[in-house]
Length: 279
Image (cartoon, rainbow, N blue to C red; front, side, top):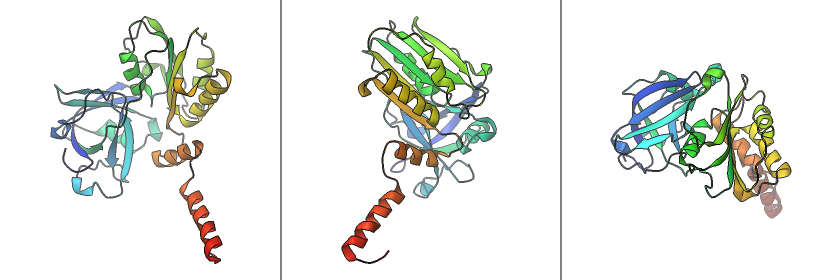
């Protein structure tokens, strides 16, 4: 891999999967040491503030936009890595707009992969839920489930045309939920989950979706369904009307982690106490 932290990858193809999902296939010499079996893990792609792909290793240490995406698939034999970009129409961010317009031969810097987020296959049954942002990771989970798996996959999509075809275990039911205003109606995914017949046994819950939707589902799972922490993965992959950088701050606050300003105020107060001066 060239550079300390980033690979320069090359676009091999860009394909529309559905009206709101674009698959970009990458290749290049820097994928030679990309680890296998990291499907559902994440990588980061680098863009300028104007939304242009950054491909020069010399610019890697400069401040640019970094956007996080799921590793949908990787083939060592073909030297191909696939990422699927959720498109939000007129509200699409720089990475989604780039994915829609990129052409073979285009280059971009990529870091990662980060850890995978897979369900515990030893569970009695499974409930997987996502919107379009979490769908690539959900599909990675479906593909590695045992053939005898029981349960549900609940997927929120912005239109009927965004349904996808994929193989699932015979005992797992896929429920599609159309919400033409994703983010603006954060209860759609939870309402669909509540409508499901609860199965006997110990479930594993896996959820990836919009921030406000995630909070509603988390509250329901922990307080109403009494799901233990070790039996649930739940994360927000985006937040309506917020950039990824703003969303990252919101996630820290939601997790009870202090913000930079809170830390600064605390340090200032300690300095005032110690040195008896105003800052």
